[in-house]
Length: 119
Image (cartoon, rainbow, N blue to C red; front, side, top):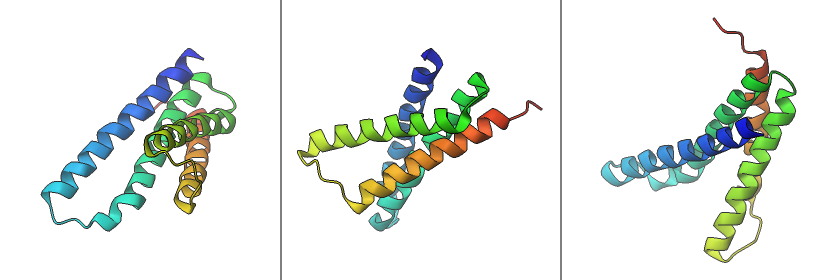
């Protein structure tokens, strides 16, 4: 459980760092703001994938389950926090896509982590 929580926090911190970099790019270049939603979904999925990979690499079993659980907990936390901040608890197509990518990204990261061989 300790390793799970640690990697969950690392995933969140990685997401914050990458979104900060994205915001710098958008504010200092001519990059269109239309890329925000897809890039945020990609950043979130990659962060979850990395956290799931690391959890499954340590646990060495049930990668798909551990990864999916990490992705689900991450996405539910994100949904609850953003809903509280926006005072809006509706589920949109974007939130469904985020949930799907979070869980699938976690499962993929978990599968890779369990099967990863040290070189």
